[in-house]
Image (cartoon, rainbow, N blue to C red; front, side, top):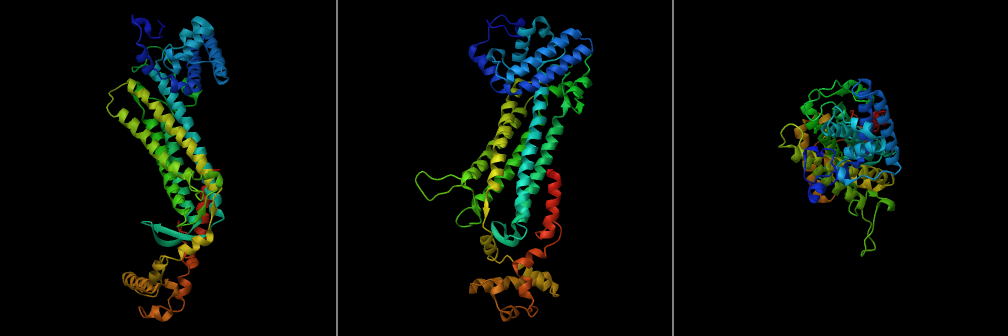
Length: 458
């Protein structure tokens, strides 16, 4: 039978189906770089502390470095019989350098080894996500900077509510993506704790220098409890949660883009390079990229729920169930790594129908609140002003007019406080410009927000 590295206690061979079921090399092979870097740091420490001979440690390090080069050049084939990436690399190492290769695993277990590899992956993955999200934010900032005066309707309940600008609207999403970066930074910090030295679950009798390994690998701290170190997957959940919230933000934005690109809204035209057609309807131009991103959000949610469900009933410490963490982790990462650049490109190549946006903002009584504010500033209590403008809107609906299409006589019939300056006060430009409280849609306010986000994305 094929000799397992753990096989000393066993007399019989593993069932072929069970061996394939048990193996994780088909997906955890992508951890090879982190596994090798972790093993190099571990070998150096073993040599420095005298746990193994310095000569043996140096030979192990050289062997691992050569294996890394060969894997990246496609010269190493992984074997399912070795179950996982850790045993595959150890097997290759031993085949190449002989007996000293068997000393690498001194003072560690695959339990703390996989915890180390996965933490290193999450640290890198979090950094990758941050780079991609910042690239998207920069694209949105570019759009906002040239649309500070592009008036459009803002909505509540998907009903037109008040006038705003495209810049203000876009920067609302930029703020969401800023929070996503904060969450990815948090998931990186959650993963930035070095578990090697925890052993299988109760540490080891060898005098390991855990701080040396942490320094070598760039970890901020070491784990405090060996049982928790090998059974903790919170840092993966933190990362997938950050992916899920970011995907949700993308999905919300995609929903708006899908609506806005429809004939009914006609506020944006997507580039041909980010659209598709119909096999039967020659006139169609479909926002398929936005729809796919919206759909893939559910997939990322599934990754989060999958791992939460795996972890919910596990006793301390390591359990084989935890092998299920990696496919969820990798899928969330791969899905977001596909969605973010596509969404960024879609936004960078979109064309905004500014005339249609402004015309749409002029419908639906988006300046009704400003009419109430006008009366309040003239001395009428806001609740009374609210009632007057409600009657004003009813009058407009009955006569098929907008507020600014009524005559001053019509307005005065509802309140004598209306004067000739009301029409300027109710223009869409005034409605936007006067909302200059920080965070509002005025150009000055949005510019300040943009400046903050530019500094953040640099």
